[in-house]
Image 1: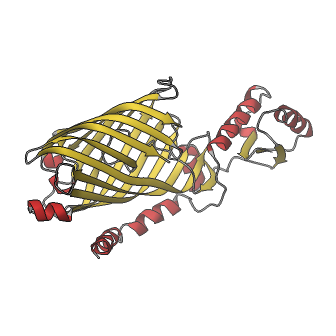
Image 2: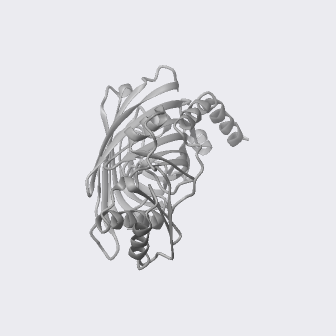
Image 3: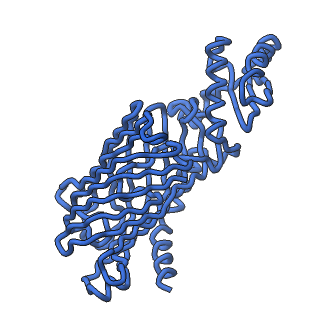
Length: 380
């Protein structure tokens, strides 16, 4: 019954903002039907495009490439039987290519007449759309304690009211609804939904008490163009204390709940990434909670092999809230990643963790804590 009441409160909180966010996404053109491509398809699309440009000396405006499940389609701006024969000969010997299809139409590039086409051209987008895309255009943050993902961690918590061994778990994911493809492979504009649960357990309590659980749900709109990416996210969070913790400790209850608008901008180098932005509470409970916050960080994703197939990975995430007089809260995580580095595919991370600052856990946001431990993170 309590779970149903919690879900009902979350639904009421999000009800005024969900239609607006969905309307924004539809206005940007997400309703165009298309087909989904896998990472292998995206790689083949880029590989074939490179062959046409470098070996056949074609201009990027002369063709469009689509690859799916070993079938490659090349669409030319105009019919040219000689050129089509050269393309077919160049692609027929490629490994992984089973079928080559050639077609032609009068113009690939959209006209400059409409406002939507001018916006697409400015953002580096095409009119092609991909429903239910795999992965994310804005890479998930490595060290953010509130990144939606699956993980389990344990460590030592030192705080103003208790020093204990804490178990921390998270269950969450981001699901893409629609993506407008970019002119270059990997670029685009995407809308999705993200949801997560973050829970903390006192491992030294007699019944391993659930201390707190934070529930989040949001609508992220993400964008990528070359090394630049961005995430605009409208999201809701509500926090709830565990029953056993309430009965044993009997703390003063604070009903922390808010809806927030967040914007993050990111720039990537070959192995490094920096990001910066902030957020603003549109609605909050308690009502005297200051609204603004800043958010930034630096990440490293190594490409060299360590311990067989592992890669070095690490991140420093810093948040600063108006509520705390802009005092910085720092989260540092570093370790090894196994499996594919791409979001939306299987991977495992084992990382040491350190946190210093105001607690990111529910109603304890006023408490200054120190936490250090070890975590395992799972990507799907």
